[in-house]
Amino acid sequence: QELAAPQQCPSVRALVCGGDGSFNWVSSTVFAEGFDVALIPVPLGTGNDLARALGWGFKYPGTVNLEKIVAQVKSSQTPSYLDLWTMNVKKAESQLLSDDAIASIPAPSKAKTEIS
Image 1 (cartoon, rainbow, N blue to C red):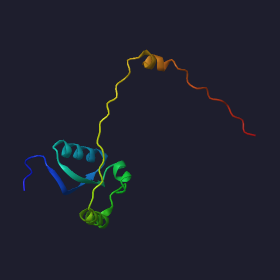
Image 2: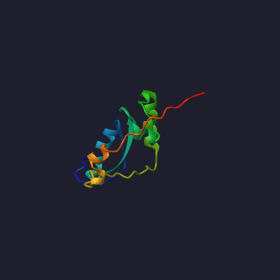
Image 3: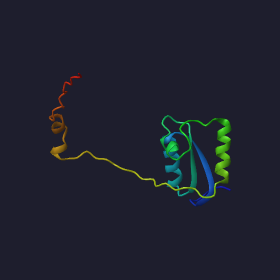
Image 4: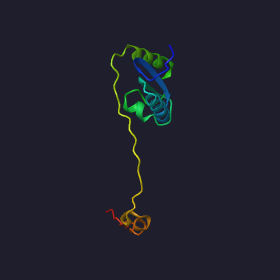
């Protein structure tokens, strides 16, 4: 069946093989199109912070363990939901936080410590 319009797909589960960037790209794209799909991170990236935090491991699990992950995903009844959000940071216009003000702060002095 072709998915022509955004819709709920609660029974669809997809393994996202890659790292944090791959997961971010896939999840952003899928949800921007309006699909409600369970995504499971398979850690094949450099950092794999999300997969590690969600309990899916921090490195490629190997063929045998990957088969176990697929079986676990197929049998799971209720997916967990995560919030997706964006944060934009702008440099302050205040003189208090200007580059010149920060540069004028003296560096801490290195105290000598004697060990007896």
